[in-house]
Each structure stands twice: as structure tokens, then as C-alpha cells.
Image (cartoon, rainbow over all chains, first blue to last red; front, top):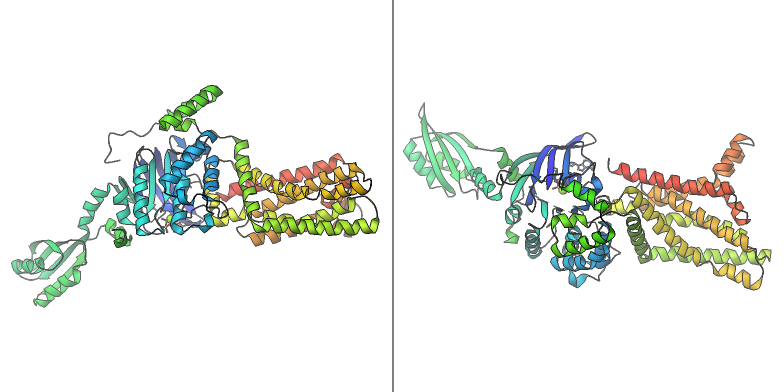
Length: 314
Length: 291
Ligand SMILES: Nc1ncnc2c1ncn2[C@@H]1O[C@H](COP(=O)(O)OP(=O)(O)OP(=O)(O)O)[C@@H](O)[C@H]1O
Ligand SMILES: [Mg+2]
């Protein structure tokens, strides 16, 4: 349904997106995950036809978003980062306007309006001025606006930003429910968000795709997150026993290297950084610590940059 | 893709022909397709129901613009100011000249408009850029020309309402005197065209900035220069320079309308200014995408 091929975009002299390729199948919900400034918004703006790419191609439902732009745009619903609202309009007038703008036949506007009001739970504010709505309600009107014309593809740029935990949950349920009928791409910098809503994740960092997988597989790969390498001058057996009891450590493997040194691979739960405690343990036993470092993968660094705190949503 | 190896990428060709034969279907078939689409809501029938009609798009934009204009207090201030100023000048002129004529009133009206039109146009495109609604507009199946025309027509609609409220003046003259109706009609045609030019230029300028106040100031400045170009020409002395300035300036073309003998070249002059300004606005919105 969406094909992004070798997409690059530079602003003035800055390369914001470089050589990004991915595709989204019909009915799929794809999470577009990346830290601030990664290029999520830029990529989405190109997919939706708001701005042209510097190089590369994007097709939506078989239409090139640049050369067959109008055809592609008819099939896309888009919630930009800043919700495009007219404060002086009522919710209902605004949604009708968007429906007409997107080319929905007049005969279907009534039905789709009711559907969108219902799906986004904004029926009770339909007659209110947009300027009088709370942030959460504005966001919902923004989502309603993106689905009102029953588009094949829905692009949502950080749809849960600024919502309270209850609303976040509701919005995720709504998005989940839209999957299957619509093809959805949503961007976020919140890691748990993608595992809750998306069938597949593309991680983008520094304008490049860093990884692409299902949330489950990514979580598995992430379990290597707290892998630590340690080298010390110590008796192997005792060293292993001492390290095993450090809180948060799940597994320790060790091998002798010449010169009486031992090299250990330590795996943690990933919930906390065990390195300082490991160091304290080794030094406390009177052994000499030669090396201690996180066995870092590039993916891990990206994840560390992602906001993972989400206690509120639980 | 890894986890869904069986799913082929949606092939483009199946979509394109579907669009092609849509053009050949009769209206009845299309209506039927629409009903089916409403029932099944499948992806392919969904795409079928969406077509783009330029007039509908222009109407949608113009309609929303009117909605917003009349929802804003500034609009009523503009109307009130326009009517009060005009009423005041109209009665002074009438009192002093003791003639049932509106030609001087129209010239005054144009000057008032020169300051008021920019306050109508200042937000037209600049506000869309500032608030981010431009992202909605430019990602909708809408051509830039449709957007610009819709905006201009919306502003024109507002202007015509405002102008209609001045109709009591000629009616008053008609009741107590015998005005030259040709002159009055010509004056209205002229003032509508001049207003159209002001609004088109203001619209173009509002496409250049996100800041309404800059759009307002720049529009008033540009309109003043265009209106008074004539004076500048005269200071070059007579000859080619002066007559060129005379031709380019807005004001000299206005007289033929209020005198009741509309000259074709004045009509063409105003219409081409409108077209040029709207064209520039379209180009300006188009190049926005590339920035
Ligand atoms: N209009 C612009 N002009 C110049 N540079 C820009 C523009 N928009 C974005 N950038 C730059 O391009 C890079 C990618 O920005 P983008 O907005 O796509 O990131 P993002 O992933 O959406 O970030 P965020 O999570 O903060 O929304 C950033 O470095 C940003 O500074
Ligand atoms: Mg962004």
C-alpha cells in the first residue's frame, strides 16, 4: 500500500532523511519510531505530498505521490504534528469542511461524520467551537479529520502527544481498531507505544533506518541491551560466583585469558545499569578490574535516546 | 517485510486502470457504484467514489473562508468602518455639491478600500501558514490554483456583502433626485473591479509571509504606491515616462467607470491585474512546498 524507496531529503544544506526505504502492506499498522530530530515528520510530509523529496520515490496505493499527487492525496488521511484546526469553526463544521476538501461525495458526508464523531468520542462537543476545546479533544478532532473520508492510508504524526493517560489508552485502542480496514503509519518516540499498537516497527535515527522488525523481535533483540563485558585479574570460579549475586544480573559466562586474567560476559535484566555495582564488587574483593564496558549495539544507543518512561500509561 | 514474506506488494497497475474506466462509466453507474461503496466500504470501491471537481474544491475553500470571515469580530469592524466612513463622506459630498451624483463618492470609496481590503486579506494565506492548517490544505486533493481562487472568491463574497450595504445611498438619491443610473452602475462595476484588484494583491502578499501584520502593512504600502503611481509619473515631467506611469497606476483607470462610459482598456487593465496577482499567489503557494 505504501512503498518508500531510497528516500532522501535535505533542507538547505542539512540532510534530514537519507536513503530511507520501507514498505507497508495493506491493513498493516506500522510504527515509525525515532528520537527527536530523527526525520519522522520529514518522511511523513513527503509521503503525504506536503513537500517533495530531494531524491527517491514514494507510492501510495500505486500512485506516485509526486507525479500523481492528487490521486495519491485522495487516499491519504493525515494528522500532522501540529493539528491543523480552525479555531473559529465548530467541530462539526470543521469536519464537514475536511470531508468536502478530501473529495468525499456529499451523499456520504453525513454518515462518515457520525462515524468519525463516534469513533473519536467527540459527539458531545460537535457543536462547540474548536478554540474552546481542551488539548486532548483537539487531538481527537485531529484524528477524526484524518479518517473522515475513509482513506486507504492514514498517517499519524505523534497522535498521542499531549494526551492524558486515559486518553492515550483510548487513542491507541482507536488506532488498533482502524488497522485492517485502513493502512496506518504512526510516528512516535515512545517505545511502549509501538509494542501496544503496531504490527511492525521501523526505527529511524539520524535520518536513516536503523532497524525494522516486529515489536516482539525488537524486544528480544533489546534483551541484549544490558550485556556488559568485564575483564579482571581474579580466580575464575570465585569471580563468577561474586558477580552472579549482584542484583539485576541474570547470567554470567567467563573464560580464562592468559596472564591470569578472566573475561566475563554479563547479562542483566535491562531494568537497571549494573556496571557500577559490578565494579564495586570486583574491587571490594581486592581483585584488580582491567576493563568494564557495555557491549553496545547501535540499536541500543538509539533506544537509550528514546523516551521509555511511560509509567503513567500503565 | 521479514515477517510477512507471503504478502506481495500491492501492484500499481490494478489501481490505475480502475481509475481510467471510471471516466467512461455513466453517471448512473457511478451513483450505483457509490451506493455499493457505501455498503461494502471495500478499498477498491472506496477509491472509486473519490473524484476531484475543481469547482467543488473552489467552493469548499471559498465557503470556509466566508464562514471564518463572518465568525471574526474584525470582519464586522471592517464593515462598520466602511459604512460609517462612506456614509459620512456621502452626506458631506451631497450637502456641498447639492447634486444627485455618486462619482466622487466612488473615488472616496476606493481610497477607503485601499486601507480596508488588506485587513480582509492579511490572514488569508499567512494565517494558514502560521497555524499549520496549510499542511491540511496542501495534502488534500486540491490544486494550488483552486486554493487561491477559492480564497479570493471568499474574500470577494465578503466584499460584495459589504458593498451591497451601500446600496441605500443610490436608492436615497433616486428617491429625492434623479441620478444618472448609468454612472451609478458604472461606478459599482468599477468599485467591484478595484476591490477585486486590491483583494488579489493582498492575497498574493499574504502568501509571502506567516505574519498577518507584515501582510497588512506590506499590502497597504503596495496598494498606495500602485494607486499613486500617477503622481510619481508626473514628477518625471511629461512624455513617455509620465504616460507609462499613467497607464500603470490604478487610479486613472477608475474615472471612466464613474463617468458612466466604461472603456474597454480600463476593464482589461483591472481584470489583467487580478489575473496577474492571482497567478503570482498560485506560484508563491507552489514554491512554498520547495522551501
Ligand atoms: N523546515 C525545515 N528546515 C530546515 N531544517 C528542518 C526543517 N524541518 C526539519 N528540519 C531538520 O530536519 C531534521 C529532521 O526533522 P524532523 O522534524 O523530520 O524530525 P522528527 O523525527 O519529526 O523529530 P520530532 O520527534 O522532534 O518531531 C531535524 O534535524 C530538523 O532540525
Ligand atoms: Mg516530528
